[in-house]
Length: 511
Image (cartoon, rainbow, N blue to C red; front, side, top):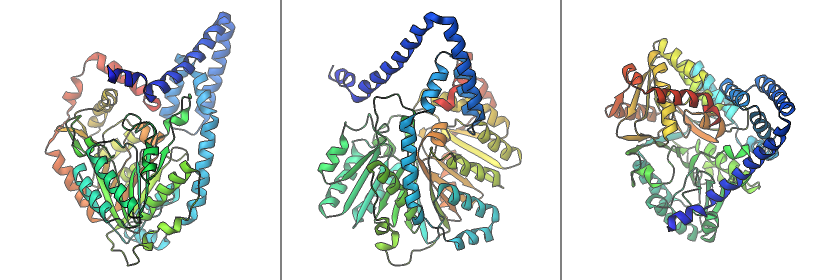
């Protein structure tokens, strides 16, 4: 009974009811106007047609256009109104304007050493061009003088993270989509509390919706009382607002400016298999030591300063401040971020670039495979051109509708020559690419519309680092416990499931 009452009076329930009330109010107004049905319907149809013409003329993803067009034409009394409501959102415009201001202020701190770009181009011009694209459009440079360590599964990441947190002497920055009280977070929190007492600066940032059901309301105030600075990204408000879709899906830790972690692992117990929700949870992260950590530091500070509405002295957090000795080098390392508000789908384009340039193979791990036509074409064309494309997805789902959609793409991809596998022991949450024994990507970016178009994300692009071989080895070891999906498997699907898949694929860009 107590759990039921807690849910009824929970923040998610109250906010949800208020948003539903606003939706209901809009529907009621439209219904009242429908007493003049013929005239009202004609006006709505004209507005819908004009809205679709405007939508088609926009330089956005065709799948997004198609999904909205179907929605508007199916529900002409409501569809256009909701699209206009989203498109003319004042809070969204202010949100974008303030974030762009932060990026503009911090841009002079992210200067590319052109000699490094030229060095990569001298080894392979195509790969050098990929690095240049990331630098130009994500705003984050490529570096040498950095060593990396691939960490998988989550238990290994947790072990190394705790070791490095214990060594911190100056500052700790942590930015995560999900934080949940339990073994993992309680262990980390204990370290952070001790570090604060030692005079070390500690900052924690979490996404409000990502942690909505995993942390108590106003948890940030609890951390502040402990001396830990805390920001909550894009707070959930009881207002019908498209900007609520833009979540901070990043997972970043920076320690003393020269140690960094990033990847797919949140701070919750299922990520380290301390609890079992969907079988064995397989995930991946990467540790960086050296110059490239500066990109992660700036990524964190940009988001922090946006959330806190402040500007600060960024130079005091540079890698060399607390590590004046030269850093070791192991290939080329380029951590990068992706914003849903800059009209550039960096996360997807980095994946596409890798697929288009691959010569021998591309191995991919992703928890979700809900992709647009561009990605399907790139995967299929690479496979048809003789590149060995292999994809591992989960066998056990965390969201039934997402899993249905993921499986909806199997047949088309397998027909193109792509090998698709499911991770039989449970749920794979890793987001990794590895190609031709030279290139690798580890990050937070899923192969779905939310990650590629709506969320703030991050990844690390690797060229000729020792960790590229580690990512490949991990993939090959996973194949031993995976089940390969065949065309025969794809055909063993109920008609009702096929119907649900078809409907979900149409509206996938809006989910």
